[in-house]
Image 1 (cartoon, rainbow, N blue to C red):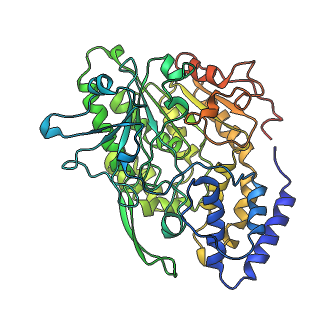
Image 2: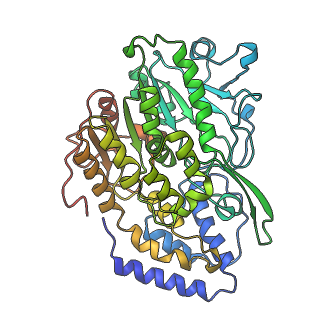
Image 3: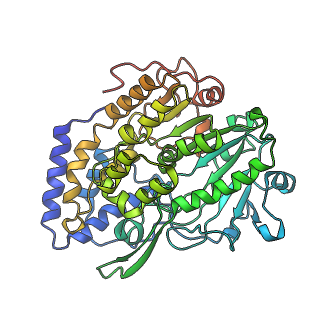
Length: 464
């Protein structure tokens, strides 16, 4: 699984030499970001930059990037244009809270609901300043799967505005486990309802800051970036609070809450998991395709997005964690975020879905490794080599979580694919089969995780 580090070093060296010979490193950086955007954005916002990009594609190939893959959407679309969904506008003064009973009774032939917050009450907003909304898929029971949507990440002008590599406005979920018409859907089999914490903040659901950036080149100019992931999340929690108020709180078995999310949503689920256990009795978490292999530079981005204040005011972080965050040192999820959570909640069922060689996780490791944009891509070059350690790091973290908390399980596919739960290929057993799953399909693992989760037995060779 591990590619030759010497071969990686050679490619990195060649690309660095080519980049240093160019007159405009910023253009080289934008070509690099556009390669990322080409991979993850259905409707790229950029016009092609003149000049050869062969060296950039060579670098992308080193970590297994397939530039035909599309995961994100940065083009704003009015919510009313999503005609497959019914829309409910919360108006608390008029008594309309879009509660689950109302939605269940009025859904008709729609795929689900888009819920718009009460404009007189909400502080929620997307990264680009467009309105925030969230989704509800009513099931046959009041049990809720709370979903943190994926969608990349951006932390500055280059990544949020010049060439966006994150979802910066609302987009709905409609595939994979969100296809309630599919009888093989394990969520439907269990009668679960889904509340989607839609992702449009670019800050992994924990930001609370507004920054005005200077584009500093001909493409830009001043631009306001809204990191509002924490407030958006609290808006959706407010909806769930009202859902609970309608249930019999004296009977703990009258409702269940599970947590899940893919990509950026997996990290969001990890960040909010303790809060959801403490406040809502969350009973289990299924993470999809982001374990938390993150470079040191990310700790600086954390400060920009306002995480530290959210940790202090809302999440109740320890003095040690706050000091680390304020010093720009919060980047190791295993040591400071999710490892401590599992230590404090031994027996809490944790599941993880992913790929041995997830190209997107490796790519975003590179993207968050530097903010030296004046040097073009040369400052990112060392991280390409480090990204080749992903497979061994993934297994190391998962094995550690299993040692800390025996209720942790995982299901890994021998591929470079990224995210399974929100994708229709979830139902393709050929693409999603684990090499040592004892004929257990991914769908069967997900179904079993709602009751008893079992980890396939992976070999030491797999972990290399």
